[in-house]
Image (tube, rainbow, N blue to C red; front, top):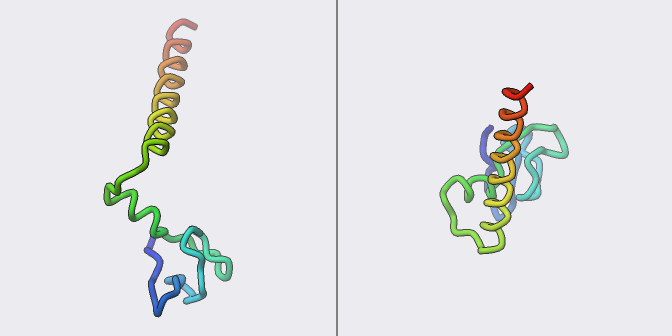
Length: 77
């Protein structure tokens, strides 16, 4: 996915050059998907708040536990 383009204080779709909100990952005009500025900040290892870190850790641990539960259920059946 290409990143959003910053042009003269607005975010622009790299495919059709339409104006896009920085939180959107799909262009409302042409439907192209792209990487948002928020995605790039997360990939660069930005600092997160404690509340956000707790929610991310909870989501990861829940998914790991559910995967382990499914594996145990698969082996027991």
